Image (tube, rainbow over all chains, first blue to last red; front, top):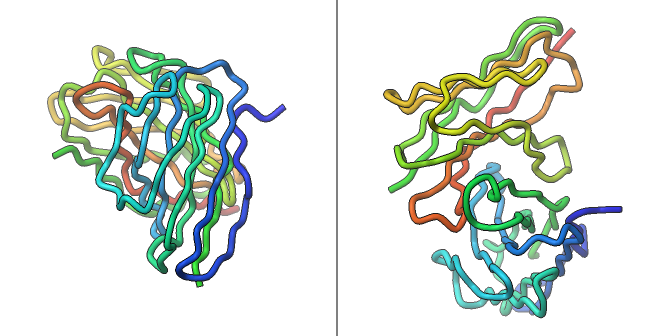
Length: 115
Length: 112
């Protein structure tokens, strides 16, 4: 039973389209994250939610909008996709936000290719 | 700002020890982490070290922390072909909320 699951695993779409990536965790964790990994494998945090509230919002274009309907789900919606959005997007969760609660469990990633 | 640096490649022979090095900038980080990413997969937490420790051993893995020099290393004893992966060092950014700052990753190649 997958702990942190993302769908879809692969996404190929044209420039200008709007797409969503879904993430669900069954670990009972309070905190969820979205990370972006570019073609050079650099991994950077985009957003973090704790109990459905946004707590980290890095410098990310406002075309990216996270949505957390409940603490087990954190979806990422991207409007007007651009070529530079091509990357692997990882969802993660952790028990909380302090101390060793910070151990993060990662999903398998969604490879987004914008053509 | 926070920054984590690692060398990008390491090649070792099967059975030898591998040492992956990392330097970080935020001296207030409480925990430092090593994650492993196999091809096409997500990141898997390998081990972590609390900032008041100098060393932590976990089976074939040894983590050394030099807080004065802000240097972290991961030693893998008796490296196997299954250890081939990208290894990421990460520190917690100041301000809490478990914002992890990752290094660029070290690609470990293990050859016979």
